[in-house]
Image (cartoon, rainbow, N blue to C red; front, side, top):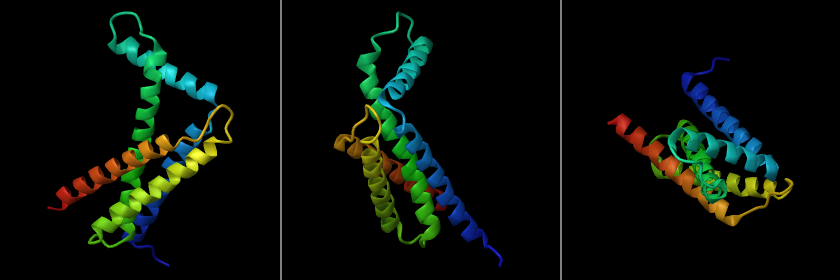
Length: 152
C-alpha cells in the first residue's frame, strides 16, 4: 500500500497537533506550586534581561503572564489544528475549516480545565476556557490569512 503525499501531510499535521496537545496537558498537570514556580522563573528571567532597576513584585505580573500563556498555547494549537483540518478537508471549505478548528480547540480547552480540577491546588475556570478559545480563534485566523495570501 502506497501512502500519497497528501495523506502523509494530513497524518503528520494531526500528529503535530496531538503532540502540542500533549504539551498543553503536561503543563496542566503541574500542581499549583510547580506551576507558580515556573511562572516566577519566566518573570525573573524576563525582568533581569529587560529591567534595569530592581525586579518588581512578581505577583502583580504573574496573573497576566498566566493568561498570556493560555492565549499563546492555544494560539499555536489553533494554527496547528487549522492546518490539520486544511489537510483533511478540501481547501474550498475555508469557513468550515475555521469553525471546526475553533470548536475543536474550545472543546479541548474545556476538557483541559476539567482535568485541572483533579490536579492539587488547581481549579477549572470558565474564563480560562474563554481565553484559550480566543487564542485558538486568533491562531486559526492568522493561519488561514497566511495560507490565503500564500495561495494568491
